[in-house]
Image (cartoon, rainbow, N blue to C red; front, side):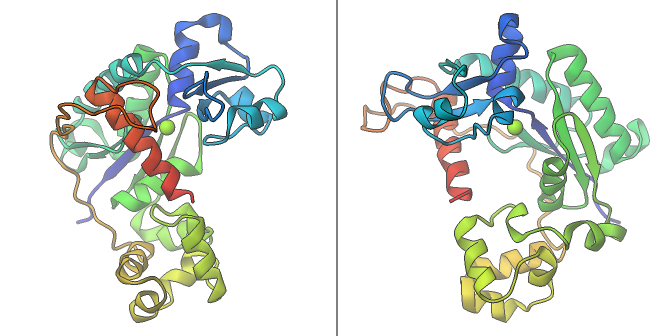
Length: 278
Ligand SMILES: [Mg+2]
């Protein structure tokens, strides 16, 4: 029997929390940015209104301002985000004890054993979306599938505020027509390498061979080939806790000491996410 895995993604998380706490920001283009005082500050998150002007995560504040003159820039409040992240996870734990965080705003849930209690994957996803909206005033997008890679892919397909199901019987129709970089683990560089060999879609990748992928991408190529064929991991960790971080010194990258685990985690996660898209 296939597992039922959900991937829940809080939409425009930092920006949504800021708007919720300051209703005057509602309906306005807002960007949460790191090191505003610094010339090199970057956009960490933005509202849909800002997105409409083309403002994108990871770009410099001055670039974002060029696209949207009235962009409202605010500093991040990581402790507030952590609070909401914990509350969201508490809601997820109502439906399963297998909840694995992927950064502050995303979680995988294994709800295979919860079906008798709560219904199928789609029904559980809809219940969770409703809970989050009613209790936290935030929206999430959810992907439902039989492994973690496709669940994550699903949560990206329709957002904000939506559920996308990628069933085993239908995954080839849904997934294989997508460009390769829609899948977790394929950034711009890998995409380009694949394109040089005529591989543009996940279907092309799936229908190549593990040997071929290993030759052009190394060991990770075999992993990607497996993932495109629906053989990605379906193991969701139980009780996912961040490893404690005792202290971190003042470096060049941060303009103040990072004092909480969450702050450290957020910055590491943010950079990790940036790397995925390089
Ligand atoms: Mg998110």
